[in-house]
Image 1 (spheres, rainbow, N blue to C red):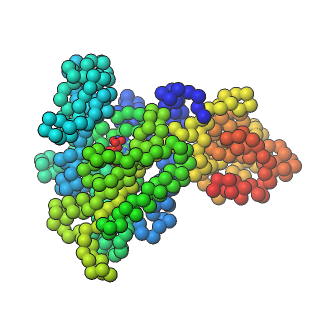
Image 2 (cartoon, rainbow, N blue to C red):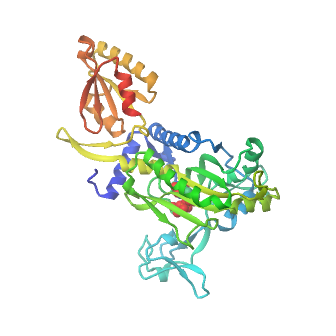
Length: 461
Ligand code: ATP
């Protein structure tokens, strides 16, 4: 494991991500745009692998789930009904001395407590100081005010109140508003779910910690509808499925923790929430959430849209509004967890090295193929031939003949490629197969050319 201090680890990770083409600061050449990151070829490969694993576990491997891809822009009434226009806000304070703005609930010594009228409110203590200039909080921080985190825009050429729309702050509502469409087109019986992967936007007051708190991100969400009497069992099922998914990603499960969110701290729609937290290098923080949203959303949308969203149970001759269990995953936080968890330093052959101990399922490339030397046409020809045969069966394979073999191994270690195949003179002169090097141990094995593809497949699946 890494022997770096944790802040250093984040710096090393961000720099590796840039150097190797995983993730870049958004709008980099213009000095960046806070809270945005651009995924390069290797980052997008990890992201797609995580999406695939999620879709497989939660959609393809089940017969009770309907995939969705709803529009990001929605009728503004969706966000009135959901409660986001009135209440999707964080408490914002400004330091009167340095003029910087902060999220009040995240400052040291700020806690939620009952005020004189018996209402929950944020209160500061002696420890609360301005994180920028260190001024005493009680003297210099303004009263907190609610800051709505939705990005507002206008749809069409006329900019008045009727044309207001928002970039969605969660993908969930795109599913609730399509509940009736799924019922009418797919005729499912309860329980069933809708699943969607897509962008969400939040104008976070203080974006930070690389991909952890950003203003534009992707969510992977499920709205699973049940009879109100069945919510507890389904909640438990998704609780274990969530852990199974983190294990699919190869995350160290001792770093995943459950937090039962207490009364008063849950979102307005939730009767029970478990946050799945992860030990990130900057602390234990939320990776995903599991919420029991009751019939809050269907009820609100029925009222606001005046469309009946109830469900009729033929067998029991019962009409009711289904209740909803929502497992909600942040894709970018999952990418960050996978990268931070896999970042490893060790020494191999007397040299220190950095490598990403990624599970083959999430690694951008599963196999890299090299000719031993780059200036021998007969080695290159054979290496290309073997590469073609591998790529046909394992598309996430790469060819590398840059620099010397040691450099190539280091490069592939740094991007987390689990296996490197080298074609040498014994391959062409003696028909002695190739060497396959294991990323983690650095050990090499000779494998016959005929057995190679099957051997690699058995290792990466
Ligand atoms: P937090 O308390 O960290 O702000 P949240 O409880 O508001 O998160 P949810 O509304 O439950 O988050 O969103 C579901 C998931 O979406 C989160 O578990 C997280 O993985 C992801 N997510 C939310 N906000 C962000 C963000 N600003 N940047 C990256 N991912 C996010």
